[in-house]
Amino acid sequence: MPASERIPPRDLSTVSPSRSLPGARALEEPGTARLLAEGELRVLGSLHGASNAVFRCEVEGAGRRIDCVYKPIAGERPLWDFPHGTLAQREVAAYEVCRAMGWELVPPTVLRDGPYGEGMCQLWIDADPEAELLALVDAEQAGPGWKAVGRAEVAEGRTALLVHADTPGLRRMAVLDAVINNGDRKGGHLLPTADGRLHGIDHGVAFHPEDKLRTLLWGWAGEPLPRGVTEVLGRLSLGLSGTGALADRLRELITAEETAALRERVDRLVSSGRHPVPSGQWPAIPWPPV
Image (tube, rainbow, N blue to C red; front, side):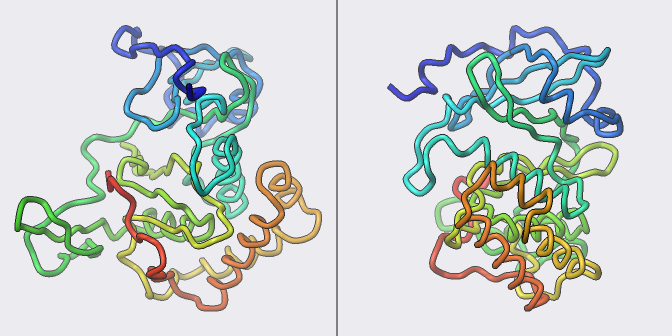
């Protein structure tokens, strides 16, 4: 029996509303990552529909309480192309890389012990239900403010054009996905907030040494990178070499081969100065896309 089936589920519908500090405010407070790592972690309920065990929790300490997501390693289902028991570490590595780039796209994420053993703990982000990042339109090309991904079947014999918003935040997310080789950038993994921020979650299938990039954010494929991004990537490449803080941290989370491949991807992006295009050797869009 998979380990995730031995973890007892809890129905979130029975959980009282949290009085914890909202994620948007917690991002502004110092020490949030430390609180996630060291505070008292309490499970509120399980999130159903995920392929691995995922729990909504709250963590409390030093007079603060925040909501978070906890994914125990024991609840990870084996994948054919990733070593078992490594998804939590990859999620933390995605946060560390994003933070080294100076971007706040990935919520604070740590590796810690919890009620079901060691796992990933990440700040909970409430998405704005009114924000629109993806759409299916009955048109031949994307309108102003949108980028076309491709046509998708919406009914028997009928297709529509899949588009995503053309925003600086989404474009940075597309760069981050190319850097970490994200194999699962679905629409549901994009969390826009009411204050205009954008966050990306679920980075467990990232950092593979082979090309695994699957994303809905192909609208900029082949276009020049935005102004300043090449400089960001150049600094990241330097941080991945030697014995700096980032290189030391990644040695604890991913393999040497995966770190070397990460730096190679960064250097290729710097050299080309352009967003990558689908390789054709791997499905370019995740399934299901949402």
